[in-house]
Amino acid sequence: MKKTPEIYNRALLFEKENSIASRIEKTLESLNIEVKRIKDVYSVFSFLKLKKYSFIIIDYNVPVIGFEQFIKLVRKINTDIPVFLLYNEKDDLTAEEELISKEVYCRFRKPFSIQKFSEKIESLMNSLKIKQELMEHQEWLKQKYGVDNVIGKSAKMKKMFNLIDKIINTDVTVFLQGESGTGKELIAKLIYKNSLRKNNIFVTVNCAAIPDSLIESELFGYEKGAFTGAYQRKIGKFELANNGTIFLDEIGELSTLTQSKILRVLEEKEFERVGGTETIKVDIRLIAATNKNLEKEVNKGNFRKDLFYRINVFPIYLPSLRERKEDIPFLVHYFISLSNQRNRKRIESITPDALRMLGSYNWPGNIRELENIIERATIVSQEKELDVGEFKHLLVDNLTFSVENGEED
Image 1 (cartoon, rainbow, N blue to C red):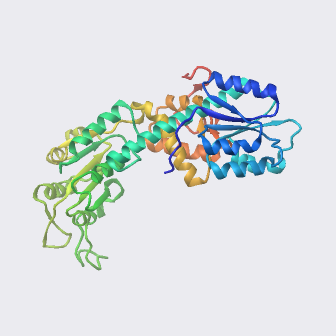
Image 2 (tube, rainbow, N blue to C red):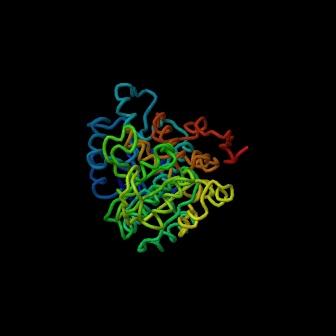
């Protein structure tokens, strides 16, 4: 994943009209942004090489070289720096519309509302600061756990990381609990990558995705001729995971018969393939996960009490997204970056109103739902900045949001 540059409260300004340049300078200074006004266009390139700037403001009528060449030279120095374009009513942008749409963060036709201009600057700077914090968080994750995709700085996520730290150098069975879409598989992989068995195999089984008629042969394998269609021996997931880690996702979906066979593997460390008589010995570390309340399932008779106690050795709770809404800005920018890469887009920011709107939503589908909504929004957006309009028809729980006060109605 591409790293976001550090945030520098500095901007370059190339504007020929002194009155407009003066208004812009005062506006940026009021936002604590240092402004360097350039009168010679070639000086822009020199300053870009000497210092880091958060954005550039440029008049469309660039003397000598023209706007297209100017952009090409800027991108040779800095491929990502946002560009604000100022132009006059008489300027015909048609010939360079494709280039402008691709390379310009925002355009303003002179004379323009300095308030709207200020709002765009503030929105961009807010996004840049969030992305900088996200980058620092990802660097911490990479150094500590060897991953950069478990995004979360909230108190509940810190509590989860603290629990993970206690089991990194153990071989204990881990039980991940949380709603669907909270990232249980990501956490299982993080635990595995930092475990005593990190150099051995990691096997994932989605128990909910395998029909009851096939689950036993998937888990334990089968011998040739065990049933119609068994033309050759098949190695099951438990045998494949020998000396490594097996992750049983949605373990609460298993039948009680399959549960009893898994219990034997965990207690005796042995099993037989379907249709076979040979006892297979295995040494595995188990990570189990469910979105169900297994204690209630035990009381209902749907889940074996002895298996529940066997897997509930070290429980870790993964909070829902509505329990950690302070992480939403970081997750949003993370998913914008992923979507930009996947879909060849260049969304650079999101408005504070849009972030407040996303923060007011209940997120029944948790992180998975957020990722899907961000991807759809980045695909349909025609701008470099996501706003409320990209989301109001995507949220599914009849949320009514007031942009003026940022509250649900």
